[in-house]
Image (cartoon, rainbow, N blue to C red; front, side):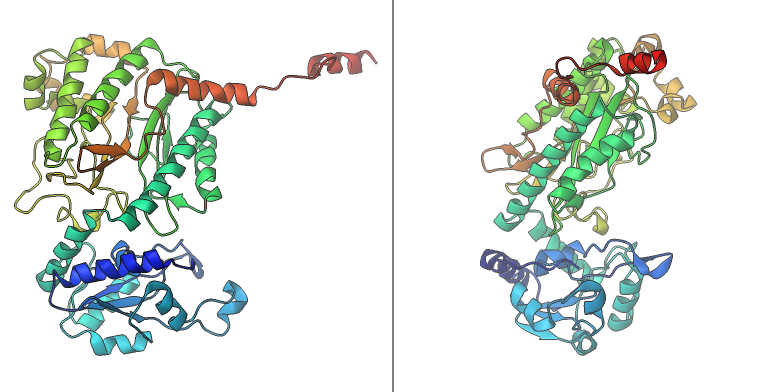
Length: 486
């Protein structure tokens, strides 16, 4: 369990969030932190990650804890450490000390929580043991796979309205996560030319996060098979003509996330076909960020990316027709099947434990269109919202070889021309973008996107690892020959 001293500014932030919630609901809310889940035997635990809704109001990742929020105040429910826990975990703060750290108004043992549950709303926690406890105490089913109902739904909507806009405390953490993520990607690029398999690049990236006392905000994607969107295999060898797609983000010790993707050549130099496609994806990336201003519809940002990609692929001779017509028939989705991005905050896909309640404006539902069905966010953007922008190009065999789609799009895809881009499996470029009053701010701007700059970073790895022997030093071959002659 991570316990660190909290600042007065953090306590002020937490209290302000609680007071804001009190203006939105007129009933008590109980939020559980959750608990670690065992792997194979009880004492061998998966790393603990507190519920993000709990973290938003409590500020510390405390296992097996609950908070009661009512009228702008917070009451903490937790048990003091067992006497023998100090042997294994060291001395831990007691309940009253934790209460002071987070600015709680009262602190009670967990056993007393049952006295305060009447009329309380909650949000399901992901681990099964805590969900069972929630259901038993509140006398109704609380399940993470079910969307909230009744007062639980009212609570969810109230929390969404707060968490959609990042306050100063959140932004301070999010900037830390973004900075470390940028440095991690640079380390991965520079490690590539000396790496033999994907795992070595992943290790170089995640070691930067560990050195900053952070972890990953999701399972890292570091792959030469970029057409597998969430590839979590790291054993493939790195070949000179390959592209590495790395989708890797840091998470601060307080749970705030970054999410960045870059794609780079193993050799340090894009081929001409790889560079052509990379520039199409980059054009979509830049056009989308340039259009982010308060009030713009995020779906329109997505459709802009689709149009730019369709235009680029038409210019390369891969698609035929007018870009707008190609998007209308979802031809672009053959190569760009996912949405342009998502919310980012305490989770990498922020608040998606609530389904589309957070991502979709009230009254909107997901489309069943091929080119819109994976859009995770469909809201107008407002200052303080943090989103990702991540266009891509992929040659997914399951899509391109599907007989129905081959027939439907046979007139608009030049398959012979497409075959000339066989060395482009997948390219994605992703940044974290804050909506501001004037437009936008890219929190991850320190990581280059220009192809020349990306090549330079990878090539810097060659220079960094290059070893120059001292004057007069003999090569290994010369030493072997001398040994043989003796």
